Structures are given as C-alpha cells and as structure tokens.
Image (cartoon, rainbow over all chains, first blue to last red; front, side, top):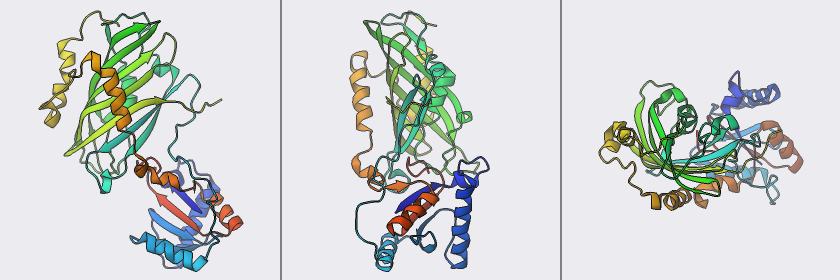
Length: 256
Length: 93
C-alpha cells in the first residue's frame, strides 16, 4: 500500500487537508518519536497495516523495503490501487483551456533527474485576451496580454526546491503573435517572445539568480473558440543552468 | 490592437535585453515562418518525459493517510508513506 502526501496541505493553515488527516499525521509522528525513529517532515515511512510506525527509510530505501517485506510477509498480489498518471490536468470550466508544461534542466542527476510539470488553467476571460477581437490577415501581428502571458511564463523555471511561481519574480516579458495563415476562419499564428525574472533555488533564501528564456510558439484559433497553444524555449538559463520548457494545450476534466 | 506590419524592430530584439548567456546568441525570429509550426510541434513532442522518467506512475498511490490505513487494514498490507514538501507527483518539490 503506497501513499504520498503534500506537507503544505497538512501544515499550512490554509492547506487543504481536513483536520482528521492532520491528526493522523501528528499521531504517526508522535508514535515515531516514541519509537525513537528519525522523525522529520520529509520522510519515507513504513507503517504497519493498521497505520502505526514500523520504520523510516534512509538512503538505503530498497534494503529497508525488503526488511519490511520479510517482517510483514504480505501476500503477493496486484496493487490495491491501480497505477495511473499522478500528474493530471485539474478540473476546469468547459470553456477554459488547460496547458501542460514540462520544464527540465539540461543537467542530469540530483535536481536535473526528473522533469518538472505544471498545469496552467486559462479561463475564458484569460484566453480571450490572447486572441484578437477582430478579423486578422496573414502578416498582421499583435502583442499577447501581458497579465495572461505572465500566468504562463511565471512557470518557466527549471527543477528547484523553491516551487513558488510568483508572478512578482518577473522583470520583463513579451509575447508577440503574427498571423501566418487564415483558412476557413481558423488563424494559425506564430509566437515569439521572452521572459526575464529572478528565481530563488531554495525557498526562504534571499539569493535570487537571473533567469532568461527565449520563446517560440504557435497559436491556432477560430473566432469565439478557445485557442490551441504550444510554446517552447529556444534558449533558457537560470543562473549557471540551462533548461528547456515545452507547453501545450491538453483536454481537461470539466467542473460543474 | 492588430498591427498591419512587421513587429517593430525594437520589439523583435528585446530579447537582447535578456542579458548573460542568452544575449550572446539571441535567436528570436530565427525560425522561419515556413518551418515554425512543424518545428514547435516536433519540439514539444520531443520534450515530453519518456516512460523511464514517469516510473512514479507505475505505482498505485493514494494521496491521503486515512485511505492508506483503511486499505492497509482491509488487505493486510504494510504502508509506504512519503511525506514531502511540494508536489512529488509533478516534480515540483
């Protein structure tokens, strides 16, 4: 049985974990202390089937799991919960668009090993500011709304321990669209632009590093319909690290 | 506002203001109009995580403690519980 939780949901006053969940986490930690385990906030616990601490895994996690298997001797079988994608688009209004962002530093190992993902929802009010309100012809161009652009570009940073994508980090940004083709009312436009911001690697520190990204993309839209958007970085750096970003529109579950 | 001309040169080269390493080889506008749609589409696809980077998804997870314990009791299985800052499921942690 495998579970993961997000500490911010349990420790923050505004976190989404209900009181009963918070109480359970506190109980596990208190029992762990009583058992003289190395209790902390970021931990890999092994609990008994009824939820009491058995062990906390250290760097040799695989050996720890093997010890647990030998101790509990569980009956082999299929996972209790079917595996499935753990990063999925959030529910959004039917007329909203969901953007999926992949960001990855060029280095591998440590922070560069696993790509980071973000989900960005643009409401109708948002995306309507990206597309012109009048007919466009090939060759015509317009600047995308900077507020909506910031909602997207604030997520253009590599994997870092700091995950606070605050738009106040942005120093400058620009996204310009140019209509390439108009066919049966459907406009295909290229997008060019950039973002500059400061981003701190570790949360709570006051040592932001410069971040810059050049961006190219494509937006396709028909009048009064949500656009399809794809963006990629052509060059991007944060401090001494190079990274890449890709964004694309994806289907999403609909809220009521 | 729609503009019936090329983006002003100043806007097209604002990327030069990026500074640092990017400014030394700014590439704004270097992908031609005829190539850009296919190039962007291909690049987006290439940057999707390969299966080996999504092995986290090969595990059946629950995302709260009480459900984990209820299922642990029901199926008599020990529980692996990861508690972490940020969102391990998206790599933003």
